[in-house]
Amino acid sequence: MGATYWWMLLGMALVTYIPRMIPLTFLDGRKLPPFLTGVLGNIPYAVLGALIFPAIFHVQQGDLLFGIIGAVTAFTIALAGLGLMPVVLGTIGVLAVYSLFM
Image 1 (spheres, one colour):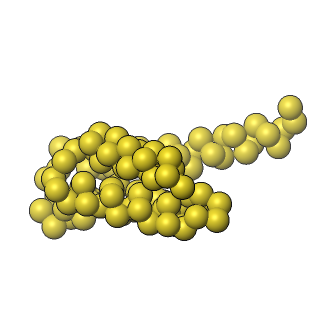
Image 2: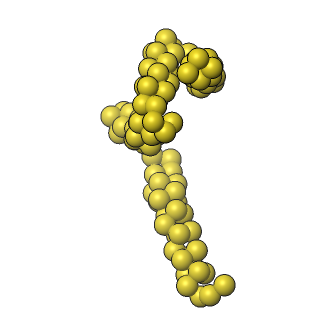
Image 3: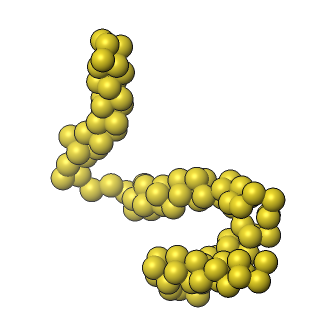
């Protein structure tokens, strides 16, 4: 392994470590405003949506309906107020049944 590999590895480690270290260092023990707490609390959901939504259209080669049925099922179960596991297992179940008949 060359030096380029180790420099790249070190750079990636720093890039992932610094955003985690800064809040722990500078915000430790401070009370954040409720608005900022709400915004920061919703970031994981926004990122997850941005990662998952494009995959809906490419989930199965040539079958756009497969992704749409999965998305509608997941959104419906989630809007019913169920947790993450029922959403995942329910969507898998519906798509398994759909796959049997297609």
